[in-house]
Image 1: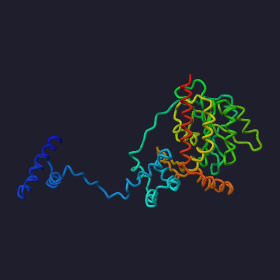
Image 2 (image 1 turned 30 degrees about the horizontal axis):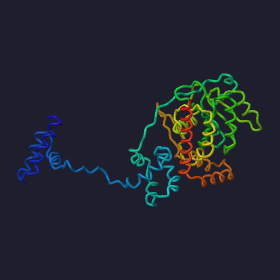
Image 3 (image 1 turned 180 degrees about the horizontal axis):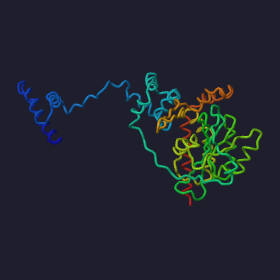
Length: 382
């Protein structure tokens, strides 16, 4: 007998079972079980079930009220750009104090949620993102041999060592002039800063690096980049090496993107998620984007957005087992470092107390709208 036939037969015999008296009610399960191949207990459960009444969910009752917690959790999750559950769990203690219309009981329950529970609560709100665009790194040959490869590991137990990369905002074509993004990531803490530059000329790159270095809250000791021509040039080499305290200027191995893994992983979370893959071909956008990066964006990412770092990597037979540190913000990693001076820590703590993540996110969205409106007006202009 097919499954459909069993269901139709159950619908007919169930009505007989409910109308029958005590004598016949004990015989109907035997008949139903013999015809459909069920034992007596299973047949009784199927006949007694009410199809109009929803089944009780298996397992213990939920400890949390989803309707009560989801509105507050949704606002925090959307404001911090939809973090994964592990990073979100570490970010909640930093965001919830600024979430005023939230009761103490709800706040305590949100802080007690595990990453798995956060995943279950946020499952209906997950969104998808578009695919990747084109990369624009071209090999530089002039300093390929004089500039050393970084074959060893820097002392990343203290700040000062940087990985750098560029991101193209050329849309579907790399022809012509458009905006490029410079990404600088501190290996020790994950402290990341961005700058926009028009094209990839050596003068523009050096100017933005100098501006970024003025706002860097630690002394620069090492600068590592890929083999792009925007970095492998003599003006930048002289800028790092011909100074009172020279900076170790190195490059990664050709065709080995994972050599700069700390900065490469930021190209999506801190570059593409904000402006996507649109072509930015108005030179006036450079000043608007850098105005956003210098204050609001830097404070938002480095003070209130936790990130994970690799703690260990062990090969077990044919597999690599990786362990991550608990998610922390770059600000927290710098405050916990014994190599950071007390004066620097106090200054960072004062900056942290000054900022509100919801206010920062609101200003960032306003400036992003202004940037996108300028881009649209440039396209529509004759």
